[in-house]
Amino acid sequence: MAGASDILTIRSTRRAWALVTPALIVLALAAIGPLLVVLVYSFLTAGEYGGVEWTFSTDGWFKVLFERDIFDDTLTLADAHLTIFWRSVSLSLVTTVLTFLAGFPTAWFIATRAPQQRAFWLFLITIPFWTNLLVRTFAINQVIRNEGLLNTALLSLGVISQPLQMTYTQGALLIGMVYVYLPLMVLPLYAALERFDPRLLEAGYDLYASRWQVLTRIILPISRPGIVAGSILVFVPCLGAYVTPRILGGGKMMMLGNFIELQFGQGRNWPLGAALSIVLLVIVTLALLVYVRTLSRENRHG
Amino acid sequence: MAEQRRHFSAADIPGFGLTAMAVFVALYLPIVTLVVYSFNASASVAEWGGLSLDWYRKAAGNAEVLNATANSLIIASLAALFSTTLATLAALGTTRRAPFRGMTAVYAAINQPLMVPEIVTAVALLVVTAALKQATGYTGLGYLVMAHTAFCIPFAYLPIRARLEGMDLSFETAAADLYASDWQVFRHVTLPLLLPGILAGAMLAFVTSLDDVVITEFIKSPGQDTLPTYMLGQLRRAMTPDVNAISSMLMGVTILMLFAFFLLTRKKA
Image 1 (tube, chains in turn orange, green):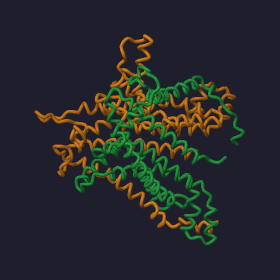
Image 2: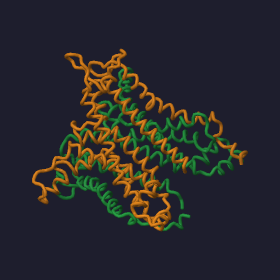
Image 3: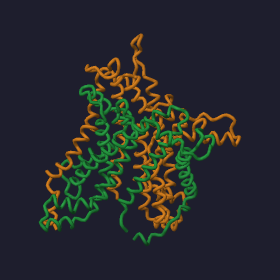
Image 4: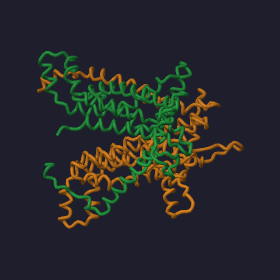
C-alpha cells in the first residue's frame, strides 16, 4: 500500500506548500498583517483629526489605564476605562454562566431524543446559530424595548401601568447577550453529550446514586470538553461584542468593542484604540490557551 | 454498538425537559415575532393591522436598500468564490498526507479569523485600508472583497477538509495506475468526489460574508453599505418595519443555504 499511496497527486512537501500558499498570502494581507500594523500604531502619536503622526509614543498604552490631569499633570486611574473593562469582563462571564445553565439542559434534551428526531431539534438550534447576529439582536430588541412585545403584553394584561424601561440598561444587555450567544453554547455541549453512553447512567443508578450524584459525578465530568468549548465560544465573542451592546446599550452601556470603535471615531485617538485592541486580543489569546491546554489534558487522560 | 444503546430519557433529570422547551420558545419567539410583523400592515409591534406586503414593497422601492443588496450579493459571491478556491487548494495540501514541518502553523493561520475578535480585525483593516485609500486613491469594493475572502477561508476550508478526509483514496490510485496524469486524476476523479464538500464550503462562506456587520462597517467607503450595515444605520429609528422585511429575507436566504448545506454534507446511511 505504501507504494500505491506514493502515486498520489499531492505527495511532496513542496507541492503541499504550493497549494496552501495562495490562502496564506490572502490571510497575511487581510488578516494577520494588519494586526501587526495595529501593534505599530499603538506606539505612535495620535493625529489631531484622527489617524496617527509617525512619532514614537507610549501615550496610547498609558491611556489604557491612566489619565493625566490637564491642570496639574497628576496621574489618576482612568475610572471610565476601568468601568468599561469591568463591564465587559463581568458581563461576558455572567453571559457564559447563564448560557451554560440554559444550554446544558437543552443539549441534554436533544441528545436524549430518538436518533431520527435529533436532527430536527439540532436544526432548530442551527438556524439561530447561523442567523445574522444583527437580525437576532434586532429581534430581541423588538421584544424588550418600551413599545415592544413584552411591554405591550404586560400593559394590556394590566400587570404594569407604565412600560418597563429595559433597553439601555445592563439587564437588557445581559438578556440580549444570552439570547444571541446561546446557540454557540448548545452545539458543543450537544457534541459532547451525543457520545454519552447511557449505560453509565444505569450503572450509576444501579449503585444507588441519587439523581444529583449522577449529574455531578457522571454527566458533568463526561461533558467537560463540551463545557470548556462552549464557554470559550461564548466568552470570546462576548468580550469583543460590538453590535449587541451598540443596539441594546445605546451609548450608555459601552463594552470594550464599542470603546475601541469610539477611539477610531469621535475619540480621535487611534493609538489608544490600537492599544485597547491588543489588550483585547491578548485576553482572548489567554482564554484560547486555557482551552487548548484543557483539551490536550483531556486527550492524555482519554 | 449504536443499535444496542437503549434510548435514554430527558426525564432522568427533573427540570431539564422543561428548561429545554423554555429555551426553544425563547430562541424562536423574537425571530418569529420579527418575521410575523414584517407582514404587519401597521407600523407598530403593538397592534396587528392585517396581513400586508407593504414593508417588502417599501424596501424593494428604496434605492439605498437596492444598492445595499447589490453590494451584499457582489461581495458575498466574490468572497465565496475566492475563499472556496483558496480553501480547496489549502485543503488538498493539508489532508491525506504525512504532516510536514510548519503544518500546525498553517492550520493556525487558516483558522486565525475564527480566533481573533471581529472588532480587532475590523480595526486592523480600518487602519490599513485608510492608509491604502489615501495612498492609492482607490476606494472601490476591492477592499471589502479582499477582507471578506480572508475571513471566509476557515468556513470554506472546514467542510472541504472533512469531505477530503472521508474520501477513499483507491479511486485516485486506480486512475493513476491507469496512467492518468496528476491533472487528469484531479479533474476527473478528485474534483467530482470533492464537489459536495466544495459546494458546502462555498455556502458557509457566502452566508458568513452576507452576515458580516462589524468588518464591513469599519472599512466601507461612503455608498458601500451592505444590507447588514444599512440595517445597523437604520436601527436608531424607533419604527423600522421595513428593516423587519429585510431581516426576514436575510434569514430566508440563510435557512435555504443551511438546508442545502445539510443535504450536501449528509452522510449516506
